[in-house]
Length: 626
Image (cartoon, one colour):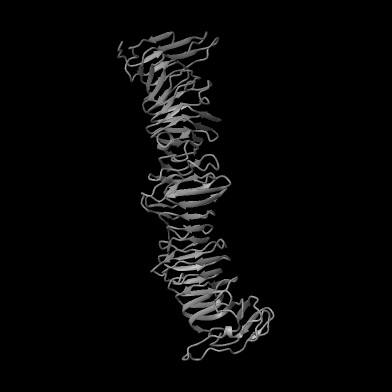
């Protein structure tokens, strides 16, 4: 019948609740004790109808002889709903083909080796277990041998140890939380997922596996990692659809969100139109080479905990700032901004800006194919990364250093200085535009070569060559509108145009490259203090500036008044000797060195003295001449 009493305590014998019956008020406690002191006794509750009760608890004592047992038998297709308002434990057996539903804000601890098979549902509060069986095989489990484990709310707390893999979980809706208390424990869930927000707590490891489909399953879940480690280890069933997680709600300090299977290059992304937030935790790329998702905001660490190359792929769909640090870890990490991966194109998403404001030291390549990557600090751009820019790189007022620069995009200096060449590499040319109207500067360092071929460079703060080689190879000045200073250790060359003045302060200037002749034109004035003019000649009877002739350096004026001692002209090439060539090795055509000056030049530029040396260097002691 519809009983209304307010609690049930069973200390001996058997109670059977028939279909339509009840155990009193649904808020009343159910206590099942088996405490026989001498001979063991069996206490049994048979539930043949769906029953709701308040808190479930019970104590099983140890008799002098025999065994005390407490059993709840739930009939097939019937449910025992426990509205747990307090924190209690039940150590007896739960058997039968029915199911358990745990609700209420309290914590229920089940410690018996239960065999019921109708499934378990947690909607509220906490359900504590220390035993889970592997998959659906019979074994030692607090939640029965079979049947789904559905969590739509509350916290399922696993206090056991070891490694367990379960295909019984249903995390398809709501806000389930999984807590794994021991740092040595690991739970892998390989079953069903849906539009749920899963929160991981506790020191242990939770792995989310199973298959990924475009809709449903993994592609709809959101995750939050408050403690311990969560691993996303899905398997993609169709590479055309690669969404794995709808949102990353948060990764808290000390927590780790890790991608599964090292080197698994598909199905590793968060849906690009959604969110990825970190509050000081760690995102471990785990050597996965395709890890696309939205811009990450917040703080924390991004790295690869495994050896090998990983790529952090970002869809720039909204303006976000990440103040954390991107580092290599045990592997190598690269960064890519793009609007396409695999068969998925997100061209309709806005071209937004991702701002980095931490200290980034990763060594992989930075590829900018979409949107804008902006610096929010002076250590935002990794000095160890090669930057391939076909979209936009912006300093946003922060001076930065990068490894090298290629591509055809835009580098916006603003009023800051970009230092290039820290990786000592000599990559392909940068054909894009370097812009600034606020005094932005370019500095070349390292031992490699930076080649600029773009026509749209307008930066006005000047260029300094401190190391390696800078080749200006565009007819409209790829070095902007400012002056170029070449210090000791640096070389300025190319076959293009330099709009500003050139100051040679201990470095080297040349036309073309060390291996090929060319013509370098400067619209401004050259001021040579100390340094070297590297002059290449291929054929004394050839054409100035041509491939079959010799280097040609053009400028509107030359000031050599600051030369304190010796200025060196270094000659390279092996031309045939001609009748008007000087002696030396290699010989050179004296007329090729004559600087033509306007008739009004004062004083006129002319030779004072030239001496051919065996090492093919010419030392010149002069003023107002070349």
